[in-house]
Amino acid sequence: MADGADVIAPIAPKGGSWITSARHRRWLSDQGQRLLDFSKESRLPVGFGSLDTTGRMPDDATPDLVVTARMTHSYALGALQGLPGAVPLVDHGLEALIGPLKDHENGGWHDGSGRKQAYAHAFVALAAASAHVAGRPGAKALLKEIVTILETRFWSEDEGVMRESFAPDWSDEEDYRGANANMHSVEVSMALADVLDAPVWRERALRIVTRFVHEIAAEHDFRIVEHFDRNWTILKDYNEDKPDDDLRPYGMTPGHFVEWSHLLLKLEAALLAQGEGAPDWMLGHAEKLFRAGMRDGWKTDGNPGLVYTIGWDGRPSVKNRAHWAQAEAITAAAGLLKRTGRTEYERWYRTLWDYLDLHVIDRRCGSWHNEVDGENAPSERIYRGKPDLYHAYQSTLTPVLPLAPFLAVMLERTEAIGPVRGDL
Image 1: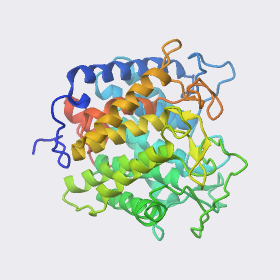
Image 2: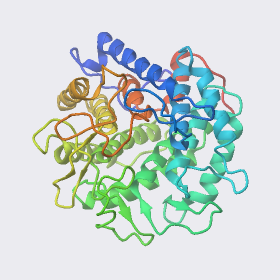
Image 3: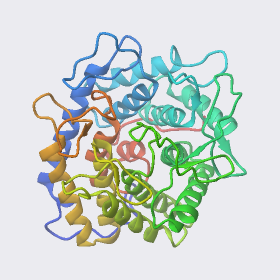
């Protein structure tokens, strides 16, 4: 099969599908480039920061580790497509990650929380992997360093998951295990497996997925349980007093159900493409996760959009709609459509883009509203400003690309640009 072919999703939806339409693909490309152009304003003297809702940089803005890593990753994807302006921004992000944002005394990276968090370090690894594929100076050394940190500090071989966080000197491991950090660790593990030609990272991704989805979500009606202590006791009242926390909100997050859904599809594709074998439950679980997310999150308060969180009773907890949840649902619907050819996923794909176009894309100030409220009016209850490019931009790429390999590797192959990668 030709390099870059989608080995697990040979079913191409028949005529009439948006994802096979040249016109829709041009629309996606246009939207992606608009997102990239808008976020160029987030550049600071060191790294990248969060723009306000109008696209301006606040006077008191400071570099943010996660924003910097996500911008570096996103512009590396742009660089691999030959988009002007992208390469200098990748290099700018790398300079910050290699320099001021790094903890040169203890190792690892500062994220402003006072902790060394697996969540933030996963994005540093994602940035390093994509920049390395794009052939940027310094990326190889950064990738080697972050891989060592992930393996020696965060990966728990006994549990098959990532540890959550530590004090700056790597003492005081947090008494917590979280689905969010591990979900993004699945993404970066698949990236590392492809970029480093290291199957052990796919094995780790499968172990994380097995625990959080096959063993836990399958016992909870395919709802992703988010919060546990280190003994894997479910913390049902975790952050009950902070229901709109931006990383660890109370209850469950339907947007994460659909995000895990497409990660399962991508991991299944990656395993089969490498001849490593994939558990036969992966597709069925991916479909059930997607349906659970849309069942519990979509229009459950009467208005369109995927709500931020639900309580343990299944009812909406925070009715605001985060842009990233809609973007992840789009990626999942597109993946399921390619994987199965079923028209229900075509309907969802169109419905989600219709919603985003009418309620989330900000045609007055640019980019997307980071969130809207239950009436679909712009809001800043959960997130301030417009700091995020990563989720939105990837949703303009994933519908037209195969499920595997990693996005940067796929773009390198399809665009026939970029260096040959080698061992670190």
